[in-house]
Length: 429
Picture 1: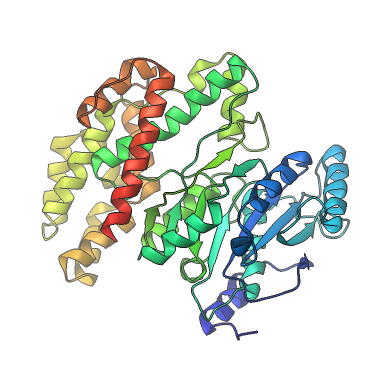
Picture 2: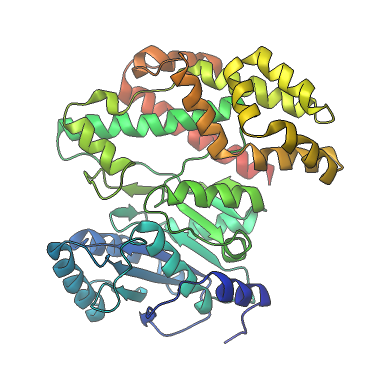
């Protein structure tokens, strides 16, 4: 076994979770990568996912450790606890995951449960990724991959991920995704609307020139293990952990758009977390169409004008840029003022002497969260969200594309445009 790099040792000393948890199952080291799968009472869903992974060629599965983190909070429901017991037993039997280098973490048995205030998908991802660091081949450039227990992959999955990082200079990537079909017409319509919402937001960011124009889907993320350590690792958020994790990686090592494979999350209904796919699906299926309303293109035009103004006036005084922001939108100027712009900008200018470094520092400050907050403030100020047929035609017109007529056609067009962005991203590396 190769010794861990000093940076990895420091990361584990400072940031690794403390507790009784350890990897069971596969005991070997020297893997080129690890696929980490949180699992909370998943049952057959988990083993379907493992079977889809096992369909990858043996020459690839032999080099990737698969880590399943069976987890629950101390206060989890009795039914979830019973299912976790069954899942741990099936994992120990290994007959349900032939051909995989399979390891698992028991964060569910008595004395091993996750503390209630930390229990959630972020904790489970972090636990699995941190433990996997000690099993990787650090003489190369090992990878960490995030997957979910309800997400199927293609036989090209592992190969496409490895190929991307051989060619890309960036430290992380998002994997193309496409939700599995719904169980019936209502569920299908709901997941199409929700996926269209996700993709339209990213398309708006792309049109505006934001460096945060990538999908934040927990089951569709991958990074170099060195980038994972450099950004400070996964967070322990109960929801939105994918958004904040990718935002950190974007600031430190860059995010690429992977191509050559697709993952297929389940359009499940769930109330485990306060927002996201499961909660939105629950509300949509209950007849609440307002659960998923779309942002008007006008908010992204304001964002585009601000990003362009800042990028073209990097040496400019903070007061001058704030005055220009006021002309773009009073809401934007007020937001910048309350965010400390007049203090932040001179400090960034003083510590970043070249335009490329200052531009990078600007985007690190005006990050994905600040961008999303601005979008919400603009909508609250009168640029109201609406139905896709009302607001999305302007997106397509702005991007120079014909606007399809129906939700499913708009969704397919944005899937294609995401694929085109992936090819452009790769060609720039």
